[in-house]
Image (tube, rainbow, N blue to C red):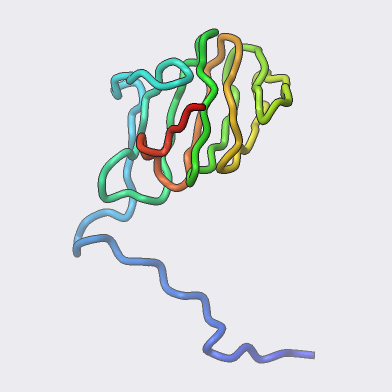
Length: 134
């Protein structure tokens, strides 16, 4: 049996580039982006531009003295590249090792303990005004 799908259920066309002729992609060389201090250590932040509100991607080197913090709007996805340690999340301790990933939702107090290199994907795009400390 074949079911017809009404035209109103069609998938919308992809959004066009911001201007005709501009590419609809952006490339980042994180090795060329200088690290900046963050509550977890140092981060190289790709796609952190005023016109991008969707998401950013960070390579973060976490130090042993990461500060507990939270975000009111941002979700973060951590993916461990190197090192071992724990992630303290709302009073729980999650073991971290390479290829472990944790999604940290808004309001969750968190800090990583140990020496780690992670990929951090903040959604929406990283906003330094959304870092809160108790």
